[in-house]
Image 1 (cartoon, rainbow, N blue to C red):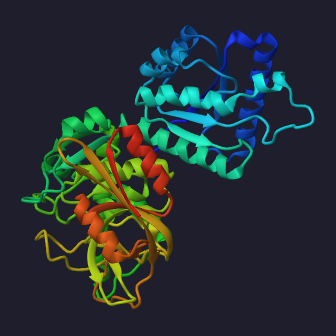
Image 2 (image 1 turned 90 degrees about the vertical axis):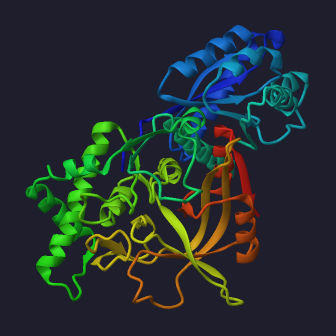
Amino acid sequence: MLEVPQYEFWFAVGSQHLYGEETLREVADDAKKIVAGLNENGNLPYPIVFKEVLTTADEITKFMKEVNYQDKVAGVITWMHTFSPAKNWIRGTKLLQKPLLHFATQFLNYIPYDTIDFDYMNLNQSAHGDREYGYINARLQKHNKIIYGHWQDPAIMQQIADWEDVAVAYDESFKLKVCRFGDTMRNVAVTEGDKVQAQIQLGWTVDYYGVGDLVAEINKVQESEIDEQYADLKSKYTLVPGDMDESAYQKTVRYQLKQYIAMKRFFERGGYSAFTSNFEDLHGLEQLQGLSAQLLMRDGYGFAGEGDWKTAALLRTFKIMTHNQKTAFMEDYTLDLRPGHEAILGSHMLEVDPSIASEKPRVEVHPLDIGNKADPARLVFSGLEGDAIDVTLADFRNNFKLVTYAVDAHQAEKETPHLPVAKQMWTPKVGLKQGATQWIQAGGGHHTVFSFAASEEQVSDLAKMYGVDLCSIQ
């Protein structure tokens, strides 16, 4: 997988000097125990680092400035152990440019009825300290994440872990570069978008290259490099020549590997982690990218067809969020509308990510009616069964919109011998009719990110961080 830096999250506690130094020491001790407990037992993807107890506006402002400055810090987790006057947080919170998690918890998960006194009450004031702090974040329209519950609850720990993944994906968005070979498919509306606004709001840089630039890179690939990749392919997948002559089959597969090597080299040199291609713009290429695009997605690159840079970048963002697990580029293709069998068959000509394969993928070569190029090699497989989500990003000029719903993914009822592509079946959990109707009404596109590893809550968190509209179909 494309490497993601080892981020960390800083943990700060809000308090004040009203209750004395002994209380502040207890606040710090409790916070350190919570952080240690989360790191040891929370199965967190990124470590939490306790920093300090913040008691004044100057301390808070200095802390937030340092968070912004440190590249390794992906976000801030705050806890109001006592009552922290919220005016102290205004300047620092306004300056914060990274994700913020308000952890509304308490050190003990019970009330010690036999011993409770006002010293205990002064120390453990999260019940109303959280409301004071929450008010100022709402007033500042910070759109921060709030997780409420006891820090030793496994479900709460999982929420924190999931939020960390979204926060890292958000931070990585501002490094994300999309390489476009050619332009968008002619006359298609949904793949268009404001690339400048995307860079301002989402962090994505989108660069155009002519297909000739890729062809030049392909021509530099050595046969020995292809030999190495062919051996690796043979070790991981089932090679199926079918009725083809063995030499013709190998020639076709090797050309896809040649594309794979060239594109990967091109992307590494330019710092790109997502890309698009367009079957209407293949001048100088022998085949449309099929197997080559699938292998790059396997490696963690984002991709979408027909020049759809938005979905390519969104896929890369979700691959970061899910650690490249069971997350794929997808397209709604055809429908089963029989009562009791309602379902969508998703695919995309050739380019579906093998991370959602339910079986060992097969490398096959078949004719392709579009593109007017040689028959391309591709990975053929059926998708997984289970709970998943489907997500798309649309540009409405006044704002971007994420459209999503939860789905039941399943296998096709029968084999499809005349459809030699990667495919995934699913039905929206709200029902096909209701789900599809709301999706269409919301303006959701046909190119999507399909994930068994991401959750709808994470989509909501990402929408808040980006400041985009969200249509969650339920």
